[in-house]
Length: 593
Image (cartoon, rainbow, N blue to C red; front, side):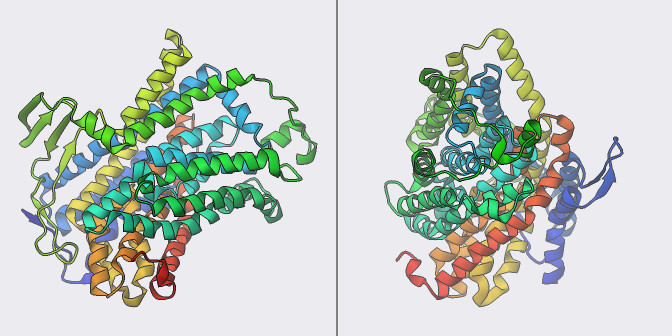
């Protein structure tokens, strides 16, 4: 049994510094390390696979040498994280990119693109429709990087640069994350903390609507500045941004507090926002001047106002509906696979066909639809200690559940197959779609399995808990830093769900010790965590896979994207911390009773 030690050096400061070394090493090699590539171009930050490798190496050294975790247990934890990344994230992104590639090959994406353009010819407003509102729907149904992959690919297809598409979709995928994949983060937070699920959802729904109203403006300003525009051009579309964010926020506030709808908060709010924004732009208001991409203006050789706009939509209603059917199938499949009753049905579909064997000393058993591998030298052989958990806490489970039927990626893959049949792909098109998708996913797969392995290793070694405990000394300011604890958890694990599993119990225990409202503090772990989603390496690599066609650019985009959005992430977490601080001491009526 490995008992986690949160002060192995006898010095709290030194132990905290040691625990931070893997994260600091990863950050350094992602964004700071200067080098020249084979083309002689100077970069800051290594190619993503190498940066991840050095972070993993540092994590093993710290876990095994400083924190005395057995090497075999450390390897087992890393393997568990890598396998979880393959099924939990890579499977989703591969299937999503496969679907997108098929629509491009068959020419249907061109129709989708034109239908979006004819809602609004203004590039600022297209960002709101796609990255914010449409992305929120995908987040609500499947989560785990899918909205960044899908919406990012759509924006590249519309002519936005890969870098723009990646940055904007990472920024947009914040406010909806707490209810991603049919409320999985909230469900997990309730399970580990022992608090009421609806109260936690309601509390999150009293935090994030403020962010939801801000994010559309945030997106527009970021996009306009990236295109060399002015503040005036950014705020010229404030009515559209207000409708987009305001309708989403209002529905988010309402749905998150209702027993029947709270797990579907993102889906309902996203659909409401898309419909309201599209109708508003089509029939009520449009900006006086149009904002286009620099590449469009250069191609036309004219300023924004002089670039011609297609006056007629050249596709029929039937062609448009047919082009959108693959995306409709995707949303429906994601919603179906995210439904708890459907998941349960799939997991139990082959329960009569059971087996039991051993793999590398770990028990491998279950049904054909839900095999479970108990990780050798890790399952129930790691004990978390107070104050991270209660004194009577059980040893940590460490199982890899192969929910191959009920996994979100399977739902996306089924949507891709159904779309392929509907579109009538030829053998040559099938071959091209598979080849393109495989080429695109090589580097992201390598990075994601390494970074998720690193996250699981720090979790089972206890170094993440050491960093978390450093925040608990904040006293009366703890509501502010509770947001950063959730933010840290998502940055390390790549998932708001995983962050809640990691720190949910610690947040409640700390709130009790400091006589703070435990519902508020525990929910802040999830709402603060959403701001870490944009900078975790897994999410950035998903964005790179979706947005970059060129393998070299895909490998070297991690550092520039990370540097661009780092301060956005830090500022977002601070905003959540301020909201939590105000609700604890000033606006306590916002806390559900």
